[in-house]
Length: 72
Image (cartoon, rainbow, N blue to C red; front, side, top):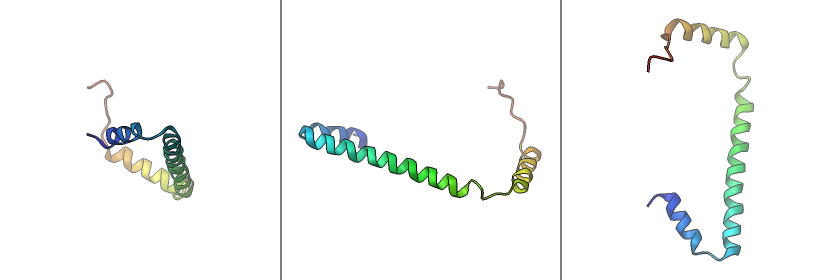
């Protein structure tokens, strides 16, 4: 049984008010996770200068092979 299936089975045994508590908890986890990702992106969004980005793009273009989207 997967962790998700085990959680669902546990939820089925709870009274409705406890299921509501669990729903609020899960929602808080999702919101906290989204806020953490957003904060991380904000902290790192300006970590590279425009010149660094240009240099990286040039290196990638020189080193990486061209991909034919229709080859698969």
